[in-house]
Amino acid sequence: VVKLKENMIEREGSLHEIVILDKQGKRLLWKERAKSAANLQVNHGGDGVYGEGPWVFKRKDLYYYVYSNGWAKDATM
Image 1 (cartoon, one colour):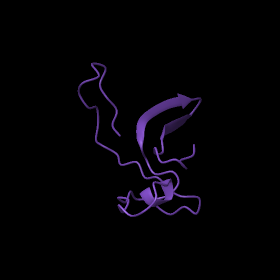
Image 2 (cartoon, rainbow, N blue to C red):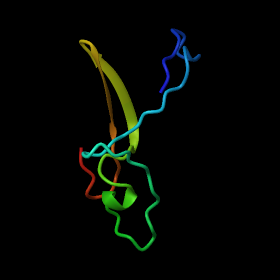
Image 3 (cartoon, helix red, strand yellow):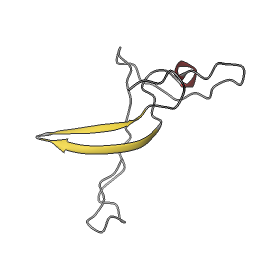
Image 4 (cartoon, rainbow, N blue to C red):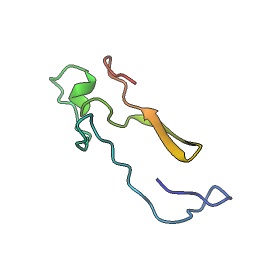
């Protein structure tokens, strides 16, 4: 993630990696689903792994980062 300049083309500052954690606080990493595995979210790295459509917004003093966590039939929000 990076802040953009007002022209929305150039970066203002350095890139920052977004780390997604599971419920136990362990880092989640994407893994490719084996062709023989069912098309379930757990086979794509587990619940909460980044999928698409990121959006960042600020409310009061907190920033919120929301995204789609996948497209498997058991994916949840």
